[in-house]
Length: 248
Image 1 (spheres, rainbow, N blue to C red):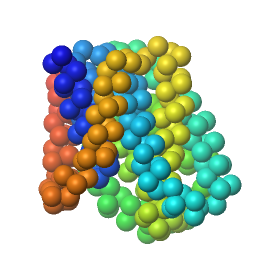
Image 2: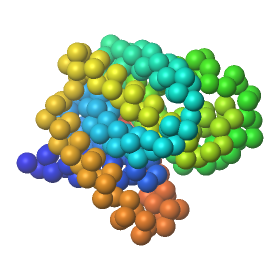
Image 3: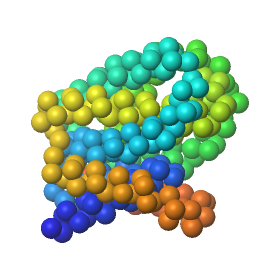
């Protein structure tokens, strides 16, 4: 019961954070590990539990997504699915020992990406078209990362869109949520076949993410965004330090 309450609360907080600023993985993944789920399964389960939140966000941005050329959305979706298959498969063949070694470094990278997300997007916007716009050569590697470890994916996608020359933040957020949803769907299939989803915790956490995604924004609006981002970064660095300590 204690573990279920912990997972439900983590899902709520994670869903709330993903809805307003990102960083939900900093809450959901460590909570699953703390409840006794092995690290590889915890990462897969955290990705699966975030799926309903991505879907609801994509529905909320449906008008913005509809403004993007359908052929482009289809092409990027296919590239995302391909990269997601590779990344998810890599996670399946990773041992818990190997992944536990990588976790603190991945969390640190995700935390830094979140903390400096605004500056990263500004830099990317200043260097727009420095890479081939909407190319598989940039989309697929990002999707591989997302399939392997979902933390900080939203920030990375927004920076990539800015590099491609996109400037409408609403359309960028809409495309981000749609591609995140598509990646989560393919990851769900692969993780399920590989037996790496803890279904009971995933179901409980999904309830929390749905509630957090729906109820969280009104609560979060009462917290100044700089303070909220600082709190999320503090949690990210704290979880990074904890997993480095576990590694040592």
